[in-house]
Image (cartoon, rainbow, N blue to C red; front, side, top):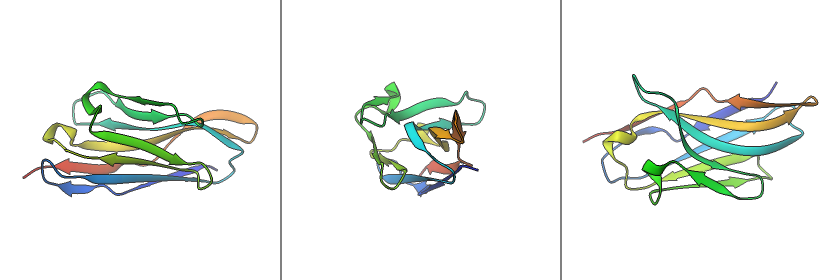
Length: 119
């Protein structure tokens, strides 16, 4: 069973920074893309950032220039450095990974971590 565990969420003031981390564990043969999605109350879950195993990145328009995604393939982790945070960044952030496990490729999700940007 593959598990994704997020950490680093919390309360931060506007303009502040947070760093989210996600570690994958379990019966993993390989990991393709990893990324972060977020969902605010009443809103659709949206892509924040994604990164392939080769290091190619993709960002949602609302976070470009403020967030940076990175990964450590040896540790099966993905990180999200969030700078210049805004109240509209408030959401539950979910880690996602495209993982080949038990001869099957599938998307896995973490439980989510709350990020609240408020004064």
